[in-house]
Each structure stands twice: as C-alpha cells, then as structure tokens.
Length: 461
Image (cartoon, rainbow, N blue to C red; front, side, top):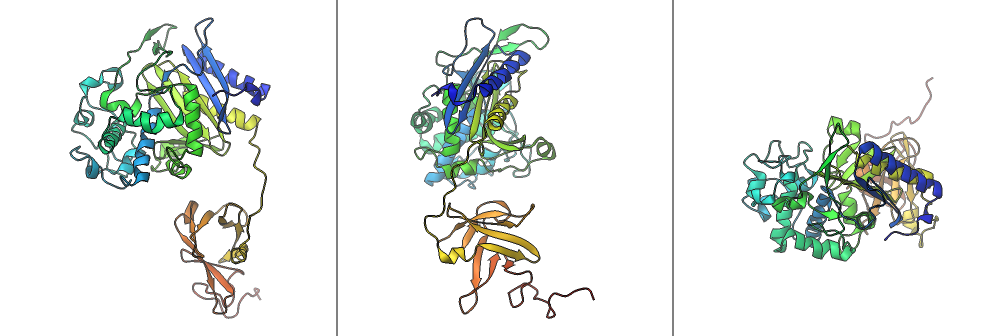
C-alpha cells in the first residue's frame, strides 16, 4: 500500500516525523504508528517506539476503538441504499422489543436518540462481553436519559443496537457481514474483530511515573460493533481513501457525502470547539479546514483517522497506551502539515462539452431586491447562485430534467429554482422558493413581490 516516500518533499517528511516523535515522547506512548494518504494513496508511513531496534510497520495491528462505529455505519447505509430500511424508520419496525423502539435509525447513527452513553454494570471495555450477553443487558432499564432529536449525546450502546440491527436484517453475525460486505471488497485483510499477529500489546502508563502495566484484552460481545476492531495504518489508509471516493461494491461516493454531512445539533461547547457529528463520522473544523473521520480509544489503545476532503489528504495515527496522547490532534496536524507545505494542485479547468442555450441564458447577474447575485453555469453540469461579493446565501443546484433545478447545499438545499418566462417566451425572472430574482433591482414590469413603486428610482430632492 505504501508508495515511495519521495512523493512527499524531504522537508515535509521530516516535519511529519518530527510531529509524531514529539507526540510519542510527550505522550509517553510505548509505540506510535502513523500514515498519510494523498490523492487516494498512502505516501508516508512513520513509527516511533520505546523498544530499541524495533519499529512497528504499517502491517502491525492496533485496536482502533470507536473507529469501528464508522464501519458499522457503512453497513447500515448499505441496507438503506438497498431499500431494506429507511433512516427515518423507528427501531421498533425492524428490531422490536428493545425498549428504545421510538428512536430512529438516523438518530442512532448520529447519536441523537437520547440513549445512555455507556452500558449499565461494570466498565464494558475492561470486562468480558459474557457479562452482557443480550441486547437488553447492553441497554438496561434506563435507555433514554435525554429526549430524542434534542441534543447530541454520544452513545456506545446505540452502536451495539445498530450492530444488532445489521444482524437481524442480514441473518448473520455482525462480524461475518462486515467481512463479506466491507473488509473483503476493500482489501482490508489486516482488519479483524480479534487480533492477528503481528499485533501490538495494549498498555496503561502510570500518570506520574515512567512505568506501565498491560491492559486486558476482552471480547466485547454485543458491544463489538461499537469498538472492537483491530486494524493497521495500511488498512486504515485504504479505508480513508474509500471514505472520500467511494466504491460501488460497498457504498457510493454520494452516500459517503451524506455520511459526512452534519446530522447532529451542536451544543455551545461543541460549536466553540468546532466539532459536530454526521452519520457515523465526526466532523472537525481546524485551522480553517473541515476534517471528517473518527477517533477511538479502548484501554491500552488510542486511534484516529481524519481526512481533509478539500485538500485530499488523510492521516491515520495509532498508539498502544490508554491515555496521555491526543491522537486526533496529531492526525489533524499531519493533514495540516502536508496541505500547507504541498498544497493540492487543482485539476485543469475544462469547458462544458455541450452548451445548452436555455441554460446559458440564465448565467450572469441577478438581483434579489437590491442585493446583487450571480448565477454561474459550471462544467460539472450544475449551476450556482450566490452573492456577487462577500458573504451570504449561496448554493449549487442540480438539473431536474424539466428545466428546473434543485438546491444541493446551503440555505437553498432542497429548494427548487425555476426560470419564469413571459408569454412571448422571453426570460422574466428566477423563482427560488418564493424568492424572485430579476435582472435589474426592482425591475419595472417584473413579478416583484409587493410590486414596484410607479415613480421608480429617484433622488432625494
């Protein structure tokens, strides 16, 4: 998977090595491995370790904790795309008797179903899953400490429920479905539910002394879909490329864009922190760029995978310690280092293959009231409408095939844009969700809501 490191400049490679070296030393991690992906390919791998003469490579497994949730979300979205479920379906429709049946599948994916953060009983990540053999043992009696839809409340049991949903609809264990439908098609042969040698051991490092002890490795049972997977930087690099580009054998690029779209209401602290959640993916705003991915932690291991989609750069960081190292920050720093040192070279501009005169007629300047906007026709077959300058509402629109367009983002997402013509066929105005755009501000004779003053424009005298 790893391509020649000369694909990154020597100064960039040194900056990446320096960042993970500082992280491993300051975080006192027994070992740390990292990878960078650019243009869909791994272009750098680095490792730091406390063991002389040994450096883990991109094929050594580490436990990845809650990055497992993204894999589970992919399985659920596959079911949706096949028509086996709707994201707005209540859980009860497909998995009755849980006690959380009114919660929708979308809410479970986005952690907005109000379910508890953890399971009842002892710490599930350090105890065997046999203590919680059934879904009822995972959920307990207090299933919903918060009203659904009102707030983002991270729920590990919620993803155990989604794993059970996959099992119910597929008629097979979650891990078998994952292997057949995701791991094998994507070539992730070093990602597994249980460790496969070579695999790192998990350690707890004493917070006030440079000593450590091994952490237990448990099988989580029904909680496995929330955090049990083991993987490598090479496999997660491939997975990161898939999360951007898609693979029609698993999920389309369009569905993955949906997963990367914010789906949970951000609270004040999360707004200040620049974080929110999509459908199985975390979204972070760091250093002026949007990053998507997931972090993970279980006793003995820390993991992070984050992607700067616009930069087409991703980073994976894995470590074998329980705490003390902010791997998500390290991963986002690796993305930033590459994106800033070696900015993405854009594809060459190319014109439209064919020019539709009725669409070209819409291009140019328009006015909503007195606010100037511009409509552009782009080579990707879309049109965009937004302020001529400065900030404000702007959206792109896809054609509907009948001369109308539907917004795909921003304020006008889902709204329909229509060109309204006069009886003689000439263009009068644009209608966008009751907003009227005219060629001139308050154009005389145009269908401006409220009409135009008969005296028209005038001075103060």
